[in-house]
Length: 208
Image (cartoon, rainbow, N blue to C red; front, side):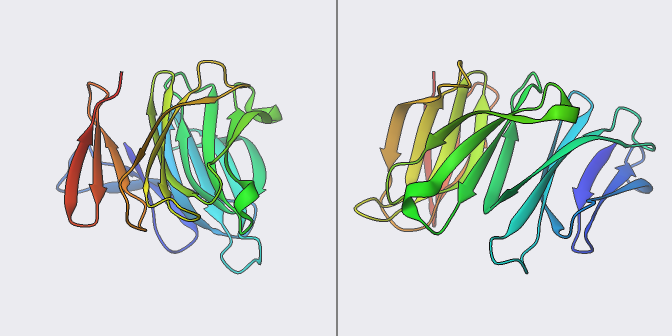
């Protein structure tokens, strides 16, 4: 099965065992206003957030949904936030990292949510991005999280690499500034390297 989102305010779940004839088996909607913006599945759970573009603060809602039976998704928990841009669940499904892009440079950050108990989602930690940068995409592998950013106040665009082995105290362990104002797109290879796309250039960074 696979989950995709569309512009109608719902995530549609399809059975693609026969890729020539995908069959819709379920639909997931947020209890709060907004359209699906990002969605990822780890260990039979869907982590997705819906964002209300009509609200001044771009109100968002993170849903944790049991999709182990794709035709019968079950909402396990939810939490609300503002100015969310992207999300990444850790490989064990215990934490979800969310990039936040507020209008104040001092409050552009990454929030780490403990979702081990979806009925009681809590903030486990946070990281404040370098002053002036605008966090956007996020990806990770193991105890490393990689934050794409666009620039400001002396920075161009690039990647911040965080050690999240202690979610309550994430710390910056690597930084690369490509220059230019558009945040790169992040793609992880199975070995943990990063394929970063900046405008019309391809750049590969190694990660340990």
